[in-house]
Length: 257
Length: 305
Image (cartoon, rainbow over all chains, first blue to last red; front, side, top):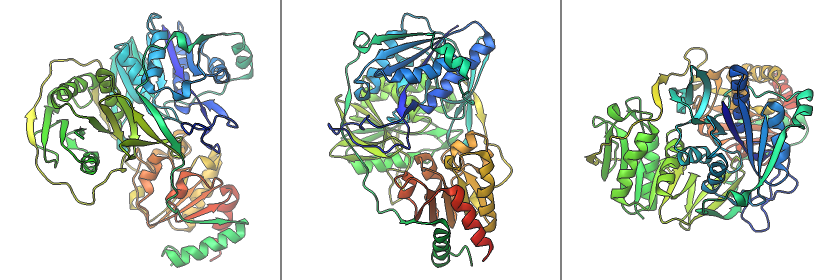
């Protein structure tokens, strides 16, 4: 079975963000980068599926500047077999349709049986790329899955709906699946696997070779939301803070009465 | 501007998010129509044309079929914007329509400023205004971002629609949330643990603070996903929606899905090392501290009262 896992490199969400000089995205300097959390579940599920069926070849794909190769190496150390780096310094400005178009140009003649993506990225959070890839390739697609099984050549998944309800869905391969948080427990790469990953194939392809779709939207401005006042901020030493907070609870609430 | 609202119906019930769609259409102004795969026995309180497909025939979860039904309506109505809720239905269906229409989709819209949709970035730490280059656009709306002060009323003019397209995935039924255990919605005081607690052993200090306040403890999604706390204690869109007298958020950054589950609490205290965390926006009091030291100190003082 041929499996494609699409991942994105994103900043750590706890980072101190700044807006870039053009005012249309966040500044990429001084940020700690990691694998988009949703995609980690996709990588893990693909590796688990390979462990289950034995005969599988896992390609991990990532679009972005040179630094994304570090994140791809993690996916290779988790168990992907080969990497396809789509080299693109301008990827941050591309809209979901352009990104999906690049993935489709790469994937269309390679006969993937199954494609995993995260249900969204943590930075842009459009939640569109996976579904668009499926539509462009005319594949069945199930989004937001929190349970996955491959039984007798059939995919059986559970979609997460609102209010803790799940929808049980099945489909045949080839198909595309988008992964929600909590789908599995992504493994930590072991040291021997990190060493092995260094020897795995990691090809770079210029994005220009795969661009097939025109942009349909752009970011006119990026900015920090106006603070709505928020509440009182208490800072200081822990025991003083505890005293202050207890005083506030006495004055403003009835919970200590 | 002409809008087409994509309503939601699940398990033989209209969903509350339809009100947000109607509120959005009112805010934007202009003509609007609605699309729904639902039932004639329960119609949304919407004044205008409603294109209705029968859910018993076209399925509750059937993306390809729902897409093809919707495309028909788009062709007939020619709306400027097709509007979905940013929900498990909307984010699944909207990109399929975007591809068919070759239109730009803007996800999780929280506002419209100078005719440009505004969306959050990086867990709501940043925002961006989006310039759409296509003649028609598709929006999905963040839950609760557009609400009306009055209950919508009205009755639609129903036009039934059909299709003969077939499904590419098979829906096999719903699985309800696990019942039993604690019911957080009945709790007046809730102390919740977020990713900031660091390790499963620290759930105990959150539970101890809840106990001394005679309340219950809850958790945000990452803590439940890591199986440090059971699912029936999860606060947020996919867990419980609570409105206690006091809510203490410990090490919770405040993802929109969590905020939607607790922002109606009467009094909110957030304990966080990051002053810029989105939870600060809804908190009455933000204690800037490391919860691992602060929570035990607070619990001890409360015990001594």
